[in-house]
Length: 631
Ligand code: MSP
Image (cartoon, rainbow, N blue to C red):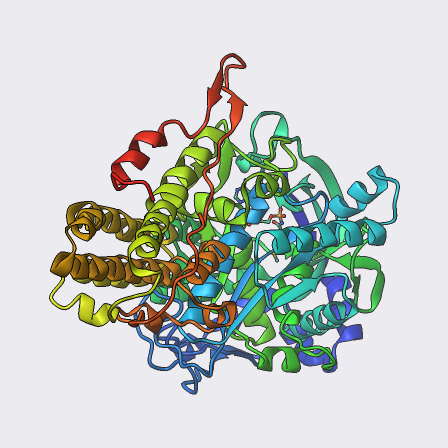
């Protein structure tokens, strides 16, 4: 059972030796925590996203100094983006990934989602800082390095690079990549630690408990399965006894509870809020923030025998990542480049660290809180969380090589409801991307361009705005664009994809109903109508290319190229370009070329028996969407 034996004499001596004002540090000791929170009436954070909260610490109280200088137009809207002024960057983070093993699809999932959200924010015209990186300290990493016979530093270099390579292959456009072994980060962590210490929130004590090395966390006995197994990693926890430094988390219980009840949007999806609130109401225990037994880490300031706990170290990476090249590594400089974050995107397994520990640490250091923490679900295989420790991972590099980045990005964002768990199967993967990307979208574009080439020398006859005057298909497209925007804003990424797919479906239906191939055969006025119908469908394709670009950027670039635009033009599109009317008379389209090839693959079924030809199920759908002419 976990037990902590506080050593007040030792604590006091220790505090005396590291504090600038020994007497006030003693006043600050956690034993006085009950009396230090009397001034709660000054905690007036009306809206986490509306006002910037800054926690100033004084010797006797903590208080909020809400600043209305930026983002003050926001109120209760749950969107992390709504109401932001363009001057204020949208700062989004992924977790910093452990480098004990190369990335798997579970870790790539968070980053793909973050990239889609970041791209959407850029489309809105917002300055975005998209932060990712690697978490490189701690016992788990040291053990992994030893197992492969190299030094921890060498091991970290190799695995951290594997993450960067995968992000490149998946088309991830991050702005900052932080490594927790970067000396600049180490300097910031030490400064952060010193602020928390100066606020009287660090003390020394003995600790005895059960530790999960994979979670890098002490566990409560009641959380564990039989044989003291961690419920996430299904491996036994190990008994540990250590003399550590502790963070006085319990001191922040009241503040965290109040902050969450006043800003319930802080935890997303909303159904995860209860869990966080119940952790708090059932009592927060101080946690150990140093390790005496781990060498591979950042030294505790003024105690070379201890290293800083890997989570206390890594969370601060969200701040140190903000430093620009050549800047002095100090908290103030980093913070002025965009803190606080608009959105921490994480998996649900690390919600406690982000929605409880991290806000408390920030309050202690007198810093503003992030605006939102979103805990998505797990990618599972056979119902179990896909993970390095369970050895049931899916190789993202392999998926990208076989199917391309758009297919991978689209499948996981469209088919897994963001926030819930989702199971992967190769047949579902292939069926989905074939049906949606190759058929509904790719084939519609290809056959329309084919008709335009055959009948109009690939040139648009009329402005799309004029072609669609009074057209109900245009109205439907506009409504779906609005829908997609709302879904992106509320991080309902699957529904955003669905709205785009509906544009494709409506476009196919429209083509089939208007049957321009027959009209061309009639000639005269009917041909003019047919040429106009093609412009209408191609305008819808142009809009699809914009609205789906956060999810499948390279596919959308190919669509844009087919419509006669350059890559530079694609790079400068904004959401407002999704308004109907972009295509103009005289614009020349490229030679029709499939933008997404169907995946034709022979795989063995799950029972190890019969071989099935993938993609065959979609053939019926394709035929439904094909014009009855050869193009
Ligand atoms: N290093 C910490 C994070 C520190 S952030 C300051 C960590 N790293 S991790 O590599 O183990 O996990 C990173 C992220 O990947 C977590 O959000 C985790 O939820 C996510 N995933 C790992 N396996 C996953 C699935 N099978 N499915 C979805 N996401 C999963 O935790």
